[in-house]
Length: 141
Image 1 (tube, rainbow, N blue to C red):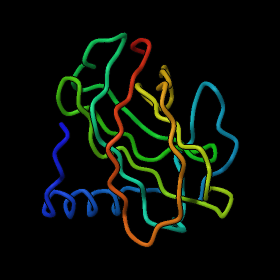
Image 2: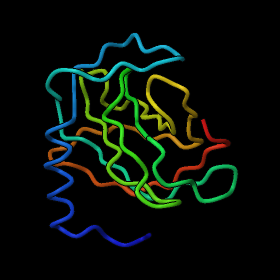
Image 3: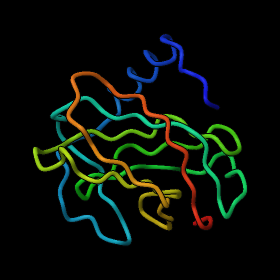
Image 4: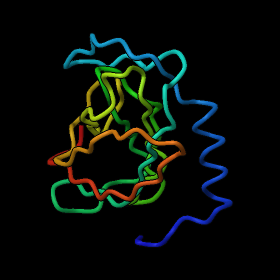
C-alpha cells in the first residue's frame, strides 16, 4: 500500500476530517476509556493510513481504530480492507500537544481496545499532514 494518495482522495479525506475532528482535549483520559476531543483545534490534523497487523497477520476489516493525544481521542474509523487502514486522525487541542506523543488503538474508544506498538509525535503544521504509518498490534481487543 505504499502508493501516494490522490489529490481528490486527500480533499475528500480533509473534508471528512474537518467535519468530524473534535478538539480541545481534556487531559483526564483513563485506561478504560478515552473522551473525544472537543472544541476547535489549534492546528491542522495529522491523518494516518497504512497497513496493520495483529499477532503477525493482516488485521481484519471493519475493526474500529483511533488515535489519542493529550488524553483525548480523535474520531474513530473502521479499517477498510484486511490489513489496511485510512483516515485515523488527531489534531492539537492545546499548546501542550505540540511535540506530544500520539498513540494508536484498535477497538472502540470506550473499550475494549489494544494499543499499537508504534507511536508518533505531533508536530505543528500549517496544512493537514497525510502520514503513512504501518501499525502492529499484539492481539485483537
